[in-house]
Length: 145
Image (cartoon, rainbow, N blue to C red; front, side, top):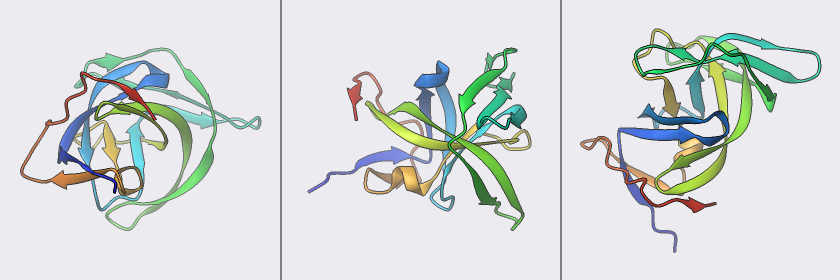
């Protein structure tokens, strides 16, 4: 039997492959997938995505363009019903004391409060969300998944 870890409605997550640590993320059981705020996003003909991560509010800023292999273009429907096609990447993240490979779509979330959104595909089978709690995950121990 798989015992699910209880997490809060807001948690910190680290994106190992991008060397970003302790990103404030909103846990969103209504969203299908994960999303990360990026600027200057472009995709080339060789299936690479280029982007910058600029967020003065959360104190992790890079002026450098990041280049990652494109996982796929994802059709994303926002909460207001708007459909967009966004590039996504497959990368390693650390969350809840474990390391996971996951897919993250890249988009402009500048009008959102949180740099990152964690959706139900990542949560399913692993976590239960206690909406009364925030930042309860203890990441002192790391385990590879």
